Image (cartoon, rainbow, N blue to C red; front, top):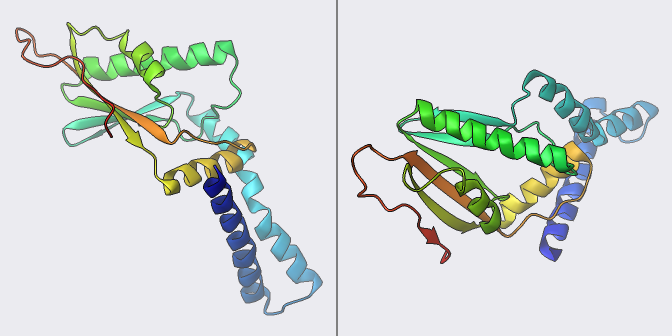
Length: 196
C-alpha cells in the first residue's frame, strides 16, 4: 500500500508540473492573472471525470459489455460504471447482470468467454461458477498478480471517477468459460491454479 500511495503522489506532482508547463506554453508568461486562470482550469480539470462518467452512463446502462475478438469473447465491466458503495440491491443487481450477460454470451457464441478482473476473488469466483454446472460448461480459473502499474491505474481511475480512495487487491482472477460440446465429456471441468 505504501508503494501505491507514493506512486499516486508522484502522479499528482507530475500533473502539477505538467499543468504549469502547459500554462506557460499557452500564455507565454509565468505570472499573470490569465496564467492563474488557465493553470487552475488545467489543474482541476480531472474533477470533471465524475460528472462525465455519470453522463456517459446514461447512454450505456448495462453494467457489462461483451466484446468479441477472433475466437474469444471478452466480458468487460462498463468503464463508466461506479461500483463503490453499492447497497445490497446494487450488489444483487450487479450479480444478476453478470450472470445474465455471461449466459447470453455463452448461448450465442461457440467461442470461449474470458472474464478477468481484480474483483474476482476465490469466493466470488466460486459464487459465479454455481450458476454454470460442470455438466454443461468447461472452464478454467486462474489467479494472477496485479502489477504496480495496474493497481496504480485502478486507484487513479477510482479517485477521478468516484472521488474516493481505493486500495485494490494484489491478486486478480481470470475465468475462461465455454459450453461443452454435446456428446463429449473429455474436458476437465474445473481447474483452479493458485500457483501464479
